[in-house]
Length: 325
Image (cartoon, rainbow, N blue to C red; front, side, top):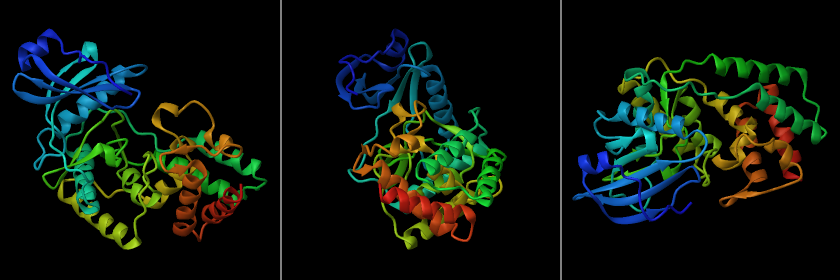
């Protein structure tokens, strides 16, 4: 979405931060407008949340930024000011490198961000890692593909829903840790766009490495060696930053991402329809990947990681059927 020409900087923010000048519009998601601007002599970024849920997204972003403000080395841009009535935040402008941070740098920063859920204890809503409706939609997909879900697989999926619902909420989850939201600044990783932030199980986002970054337009393919190294860095970073207990099961969350049809579409399209049912007759693209490519990749991960379980065997069967569509 292209932003309007003029950022909504209130009189109060102008008095505190300076008059806006040298305004440049930046591309943003449909839920916000973003500008690059000089406030007095200070380069800044102005972001305004729009549409349904703007209040909640503003609150999540500012709460997460406040929680991370004191971390050294920094993980987020400084929050220079905000205007709740207008759903506006003013952030430090970061001079970013062209390429994203390395995988190890990213996962170390992700661990330190997650640990804030244990140390700073921000007032954020709980994450919902999977719903029974996700399982029901996956079973519906199986039915459309003429696959009978075995009783032991159904029992495992029901247990997964209960297990993830009971998982400790000890991590500050970013909610969308994609490369566009993770910037390389001076060799370090900085996170931006916290409007989906929540408290949950850190393994939900650690599993992005294996599940192919499921909420992201770009889905990088990583080698097993790279993933194992990054997972070890994450766990060391989590413990070193004061994370409480141990992160949960990456395998559980890889299964959850494979079941979530909303992880096949961009954020603006989520919660509107059964995407798994749609996939049987449509094969839409998001970024360089089609929906069926995304799903077959995730099912392949589950079949590999959980191959000795009924869920793993079911994933392999569904993957074969989807690949043949």
